[in-house]
Image 1 (cartoon, one colour):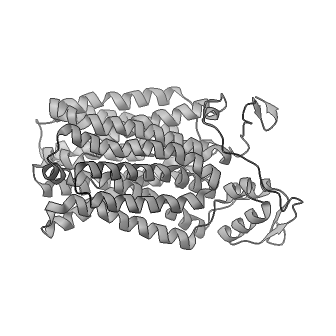
Image 2 (cartoon, rainbow, N blue to C red):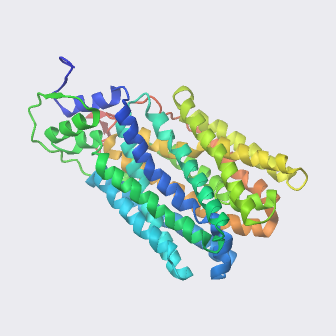
Image 3 (cartoon, helix red, strand yellow):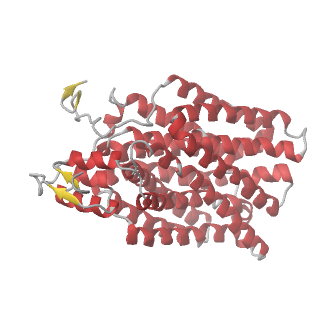
Length: 469
């Protein structure tokens, strides 16, 4: 800095400023705006769950069809995440932010108005593509706006935002129920997701600029400087000799994620993503159904259960984000998997042999431990483990792994539950967090506090910034 101004001689000066700059109010507000897309994603995923009973009756669905309907969004999300990462690296964060939300609005309205099962299936798949694209762009933007010290904390804030969305779906379901419109509960619950998406869309148009790190790596330095100045409200003295030079960086290929430099961090992010999402979508998505087992059948009990249990997710999410800087993402995942496994074993052993409070407590503990521990870590580790040139692709790959896990959870859980009952299903499900616990204990990579911007491998070469690795 000189006379209160930032002097820039190369793009590296911009990168170092972003990585070391103390977080200001505007930056934090932009992070929350990016997290608005996560809210929409979460709401769209869980909104159908609270009205599953009415939907099943209206369309006369079998358990296989219900499983397919819930899993199809994960399938769409898988492809959205894969291609979304590539498109985000190629066209920038700001452009994909807006295109993605428009897709979500159209798909959500179409799903809410669907007149038969086939049409609903198509629009749910399109919704999945939209939420799959949202993950790499949102997490890349947050990582590229946060300084190194706070990056993990701000990335992990997506978890309480997720549960805010699930609680919102329960509150909306309660309002519809009290208005005696429960016959159309699932349509109201799904359709209101378009309202949230539109609100975030217009706020992004008004306030969001391009990611400063993506701009530094891909735009002429003169344009990148303007973006950094507007984002951080600073004045930059440009002393670069290459003011009009544009980077010729091309989106990286997926094979780089398997390079020995990145392999451990990639596998860690993918394994956590698969296991945490399997356990969440096997239990968390079906909280309305499980609430009926615990509190008694009836829509009102399902709605109250959805609201109450997911409040523990909000608490756990903030608790985990607070501990991220102190403990790191890997330890949070390890401790969380352990508590989740213990909760599932407890549910399986005592279900049907205890009162309501003792039956509900392990469910609440599961949600809290999942949210504070492994729940957010797969995406957070991916977003914080790669340089800007590879970040969206790496985060997209982690989200694709997430969707693989959710496909299994969403598709098989209702059928296993119908076949063997809640107690045995919980005991079977215990294998998932145990697998995640073992893998996370063995792969010793920690992303918190790492400066990965210069950790760039030239494609097709075993070099790190020109040095042999």
